[in-house]
Image 1 (cartoon, rainbow, N blue to C red):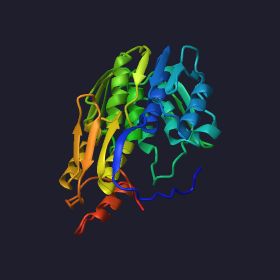
Image 2 (image 1 turned 60 degrees about the horizontal axis):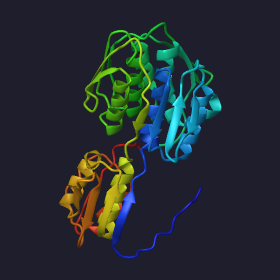
Image 3 (image 1 turned 90 degrees about the vertical axis):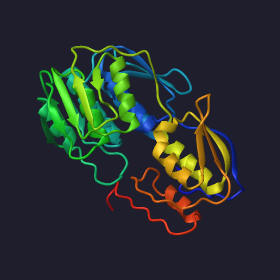
Image 4 (image 1 turned 120 degrees about the vertical axis):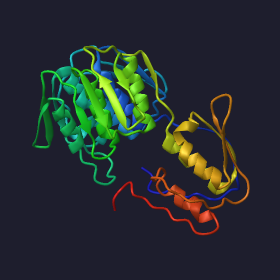
Length: 328
């Protein structure tokens, strides 16, 4: 892996750029959701990243057949029987692999999943995952680095998250879709990735309401069916970074594969600083910046850690940026 990049200024930006698919923050979770039903699902717009290689190995270890069927098309076959255990050496390398816990408990009635590892971004315990699953009737214990769970059938419950954890919301959502009765998740994460995951689950036959809000209601069903094809949305983190890059360097660019609604708050704030951001009829985002950017009040959780500090440095005056997303 490259340790550092040398970036030399070469005038304003121009041209068109494609945003990568949201493989890490959505595609991996949709792979786990595919375990809920037997059948074949193809995830499209899956750009190849290191975490994806690990998740592919995790999926194969539990019994799924996973193959590349196109440049960015990943096909998952879960028709055969699944093994409820994931290898320790795989799960400890990737935090998102704990997302197989809910689907395995739901489909197999048992799971043995290693404690998650992966990127070291602050303290992100999985207590809320476990408490939520226990509220749904699962018997869980943590022993020798593994989470071991067993249940005849999960039952609906009202679950209040201590804070809107994306991972806990995803895991509990995928567990609840086949639980008996209604599950209500309060203080749920509201990110676009949650909305997209819920949309996939609903296409599989689930009954999920409220995804994208702080309260998600799930009416459990007996069985789900695989969906033939799922398009993974563009990476909003990358899209926001490109917006800010145009604000820093100036110029005019077109971003393909991004949804303006997914970076709306960032676009609004950058608009107050002088950046012009607008959608085009063919579904891409047009960005332009003429002259120097100005200051504006910033009151939002950090979306592009570090990048916003650079654009603030270019603005005249004083700007304060407070990052309360990750503890020091």
